[in-house]
Image 1 (cartoon, rainbow, N blue to C red):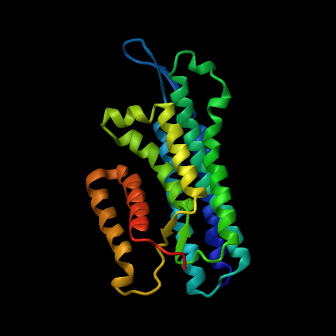
Image 2 (image 1 turned 135 degrees about the horizontal axis):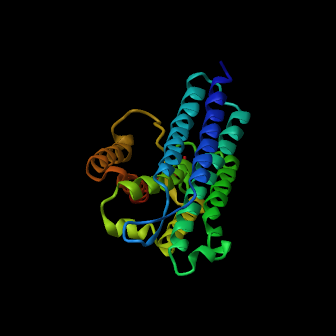
Image 3 (image 1 turned 180 degrees about the vertical axis):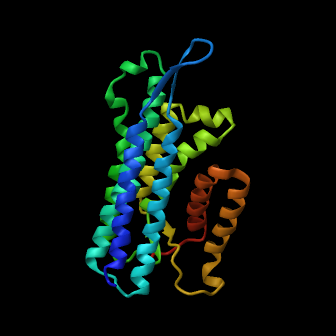
Amino acid sequence: MKQVPNFFTLLNLVFGCIAIVYVLQNGISVYVDASGVQVLEVPEEIWMASLFIGLAAVVDFLDGFLARLLRADSEMGAQLDSLSDVVSFGVAPGMILYQFLRNAVARQEDGLDASFLWLVPAFFVAAAAAWRLARFNLDKSQQFSFKGLPAPAAGLLVASIPLIYWNSENETIVGLLRNKWFLYAIIAVVSYLMVSTLPLMSLKFKDYSLKNNVPKLLLLVIAVAAALLLQWLAVPVVIIAYILLSLVLKTKTA
């Protein structure tokens, strides 16, 4: 029974690998529309990568839950967890950003011949996730609060981009996700939040008293309301709310 949590941890890794496969299979589509204009687009099927990153997040939660339930915490499990998270919430999201950057750069004049160097920043997210997770492994104080944005939250934020892109009817939002400078800004902000030491609350419960869980309950209310009103755009809204609630309520590292 002690290996059950590790099975879920490795399932997290497998889902991350599948997400990468879906990102790589899609690439960029080039076609001619009805008016004879050449159009470049990120294929809609890339949403499957988002799905598997989401599944990775679910089993990432379950492995920790099961480890506590079965009292099967181990140093090996902690290391496996971080190694899996680097793939699922670092490399896979980085590949999503890589494809969106390819699309954005390709839309420019002579963009199809642009240097690969324009796309390299996409991998900063993977590097920041690795840094964040390595630091987390060395810092045993981050049990009921975090220093910096957790890698799964950052991964889910990036994973929401294809879903927002293909389900939004707002041309401004779609246009921003086709703009390389906006994508660079996302990369910079997400990477900074992961490597920062901002005090952010953990979603683990110390106890079940109302007083000690007000921030979590507020976040839950915001999440439900945002999901109903904003659909997939709720993901970045909830993560922004998570950061603001943590900072405003002065989460302390336990």
